[in-house]
Length: 165
Length: 397
Image (tube, rainbow over all chains, first blue to last red):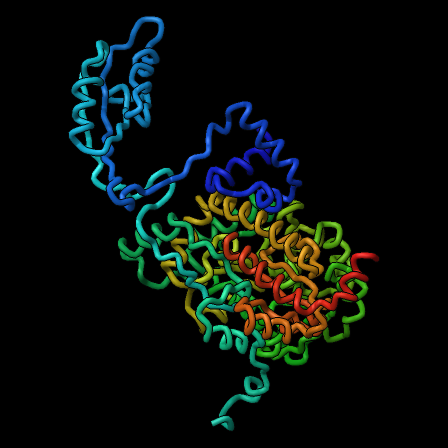
């Protein structure tokens, strides 16, 4: 991938809200060049979407619960872990699925509005799948940092003196 | 009490920047483009390394010249980054910021009556540092039409039998001017011909955006007559740690260490530990900051030109140096009125030398959000002042 593509991706990975005109100015390119670049990156699915990082804990009546579930499974002949992973990631409650090295096979992130709801999903849907051998559920108590963004209220005042040589 | 002051100090002009700072300090919503330091906080791994060193009890003095491990890392860093080779044992000194290294270097080489050439517009400390070392500063005024690049014939013209050394800053504060290898070679010829020493301030060496950087001592014949001065403040975002270094011929570095051991003992130990981490593992952090500075430079230069303040593309450092002549104001008037009316701080060019008049220094080491707002305010300020007649004349011709 060429350098400008990487630079563009880094910019919008940090801030998907940047306008094309601003990206063009920052990168010293024309607006048309940037539009073309974005279109080609979307086409080859390097850009998959533009989401917003929201701290739902700050939104009234919209608090949510997240659980990280360690799942041990029996891989199937020919398709390995992919088939069972797909069975799991199709559920809308499931926000992320990773194949892991180590003590268990799949790491599944599940989101719901209450612990009960997540418990129900795990006992009814996840652990009852044929190839699932066991599950270990860890509930998230507090998010400090998510996808590179620190969620704590940080003082972002400029601490520099106003004029310096 | 004034009668007790040393005459040299009493005669020293207070920094023009300082006066401006007092004015800005009274306002609370100032957007400052006046700051000569990164807006990034020091990368966490450097800070964490310093914590660790403190926990381990590294709270005592180090060797006068700095910890040998750090000097070795600096030497290795200069080698892989710029192809330089200095012996860590006697050709490297760790100082309290590059500023102290400049002071040490001048005091090590200047005899009363020696002249030292300064290329203006320049960092505000050069001229006073030469005076305080007992030397005589001789300034060269670079020209806007040369992109503020010093010309070999200008150096030639400034040389007298008393000239001892010349100070070069590349990339330059405040203009962002960046001298390429060919240009440095031209200067090197004049310097060798007249047997001058060079104090090469390369504190912004990492911060160049378009062309590869050439360190002055790599120019043929220059290493044995150059004191290279740099530090951690700018590229590594470590201004407050006060850590710099100088490298050069062992005789000169030893002389600098001699002054340093009597006046400073050593650079702060905890800062030296942070710098060790910066040298070993700082590459990626520097690259991220560099990419960000380049983007901000592109943004500020295109915005200033759109506003009608003529601004060439600076090749390095983090300063834009636009002409404000279109407004009809002096640089001090521009800066003061902009601060009063729009609460944006820039530094008037005149504080960097007489030829800085007509320009202001805008630091773009500031978040994109702040830069956008600053540009909106400057636009509003400039529109009120640019005479419509001159504006239309400009666009038509």
